[in-house]
Length: 309
Ligand code: DPN
Ligand code: CA
Ligand code: ZN
Image 1 (cartoon, rainbow, N blue to C red):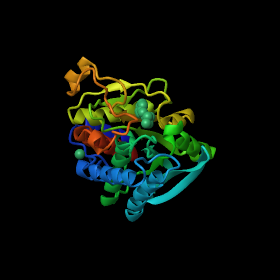
Image 2: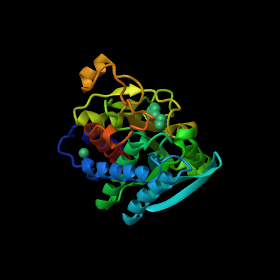
Image 3: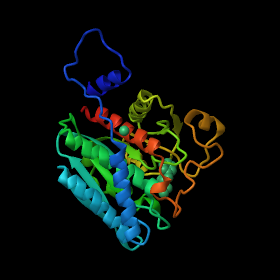
Image 4: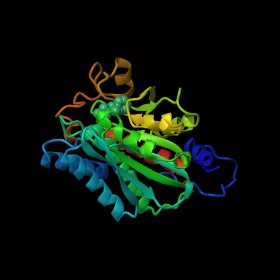
């Protein structure tokens, strides 16, 4: 099975001289400069729209239009899923790479809205930009994977996970059952970064395999990880409630880095992973490029394996 083959290659195991029936391509390196360019555009959009990209504000819709235009030009099938929240129309962007088995969908996403206090560049321009660049890489490589890859950029996460919940609720039982996994990226460029992988404990069965792929992606880069229980704090929660295996990575928010974590990862002990969490100072200056780079590469690593690229 392709997922297993990919995992074997990741840990560098060779099985005699047997050549796999399908060569499993290693995921490409995601150029962090491209991810940073998306963040610069999200910052520009916030600055041009009253300083934020929040639900119901013009900066949100402009953010969605930016991502959608890039995906449309790259050959994705995109659609805007609308919902209503706090008296305003909310928008999710759903994008399918229109190749691979439509009955075996791997989904990945993150929230595209910011809080109203600031531009939300780490939270969650970072995950949004990393996902976008991985999507564009899939297109550049003209991948023909075994499974279907679908991305979601969620609205109104900051109001209580509203967009992702509306999306999962909008699916029929049959549409839910073809989604074999969901991988979430919410904050991946924290200035005093952590390398957290979502714990699979208490999550739907199948989540452990996603967690292991994410851990292996970091291990292949020589980056140590810790597990974190993100509970209901991000958009994976609606998928988990629907029984869909989930996972994700996270570079930390308001929590403080311990001395042991600073030893392991560098950075400053007793300082928040993101001192600008939900603040006006969550700008392009609030991004650690190494964290953004590593987490983005791990997105590609996990998704390529999961879709059998
Ligand atoms: N859900 C994030 C926010 O948008 O505020 C913070 C967060 C992300 C917390 C991931 C835990 C894990
Ligand atoms: Ca990279
Ligand atoms: Zn937030």
